Structure formats: structure tokens, C-alpha cells
Image 1: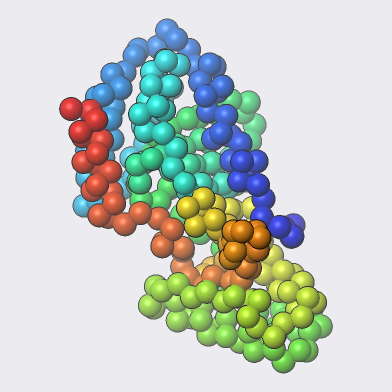
Image 2: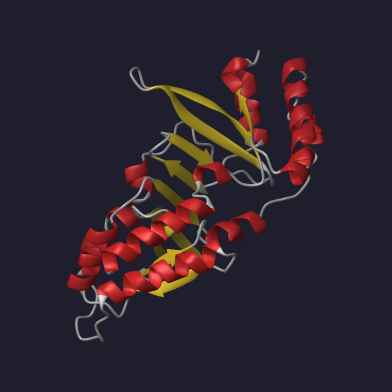
Length: 267
């Protein structure tokens, strides 16, 4: 796993989603057309089902013509939350539409040349939970730190806190932020942390909050980077201790609002 010294450019990370419109030209035009307004009604109904506890629903767009997909794109637009996950078997990319809970979803099998395009309805895209299952639970961070040869008390105290926090998170489900720039850590300590908690390629980008979230191999531990001062582009880095950064994602009230908005458009 490689260390990322700086946040990746979201326009580059999510290039697959950003290139949706050119990708539309590759769709066959002789397939059965689907009424876009009926599709929006189905998405609205799916949102209500998800809001009531139902599973995520996928809408395969391969049966739509290029013009229909462009029309759908113009109606539901692009939102401010993106997710990228290069799995061993497939690469997943998702970008929320202007309707929270509705996602443009693209999946590309490693051995395939063409991507599959979907609309997924759900608070969180389903592939995210696939990533979570692959994380290691309860790592022995203290032993791992010793193997890296670090004996600085401040770093050892931080790692001890991480071990304690990750156990607590299983119970209380809260999010705990640790801003590393506020701690008495040296540059070497930060480098040691990157070795102890390497960033994976699982990335969440929130344009609204100007924040990046990166996965680690360990359950309940994430790296975050956010713009602390937009005027000087000053960034703050740190660790996020939680099962998943749910605060970035829509709540069930927002799903209901999205459903009602779509119903009005499709009426």
C-alpha cells in the first residue's frame, strides 16, 4: 500500500464519473427505451423504501439511449459527495446526484474494457460495505509501533488512545476526530503513523466540506484531510475514529425530501 503525501485531485480520482457524458455515446441506440419520468417515479419509490429500512436498489441504465441518459443526467445532476474504491476484482466509482440518496454508480471489472453504469438508490452505496468487510479488526497497534522503533512518549500515548477509542466506537457509534496538528508530534512521528496506519485507495471526497477521507487496513480508523482556511488553502490532517463517517451521508429525512422532489419533477 502506498502512502499519499497529499489529497488526490477529486477531478482525477473520479474521472470515470466525470466522463459519463462521453461514455453515453457507447450505448446502443436499438435497445428498448425507458420513459425517464417513469424512471424518476421508480427512483422516488425506491427512496421511500430505503427510508423505511429497505435494501439499496439498482437501476441498470444500459437499456436507455444516449439521449435518454443525457436527459436523466440533466434532471438529477451531480452532487457534492464522491467515492472511489479500486477492489481486486473491480473498480467502483460513485457520485451522489443533486438528490441525496441517489447515486451515479459505475463499475468496471478488471478484465473488461467497458464499464457498467447504474443509478443506485440508498443512503450509502453498497460497495462501501464490501470494503469494510476486508478491514482487520482489533489490530495490535502497540506491538506494531514497537516494531517500527518509535519510543516517543507523545506518539505512544496517541496510539494507546487509538486502541481505547476503537474499542469504544463499537459501542457508541460516534465519530471522534484527532487533529494531528494540535498534538505535540514531530514530522517523524507523522511518518511513523503513516507506516503504522497506511492509507488505502478507498477515498471519500466531500466538495461541500472540502474534506477527503481515506481508508486504512484497520476497522474504525480513517485518515482525514480538510481545508482549514480556504483563503490560504491551509489543510488540517488527522485521524477519524468511527465505524464509518456517516455524518457525510444523508439522513433518512433527506431521503424523504429527495423522494418528494423527484415526485414533483416526474408528476
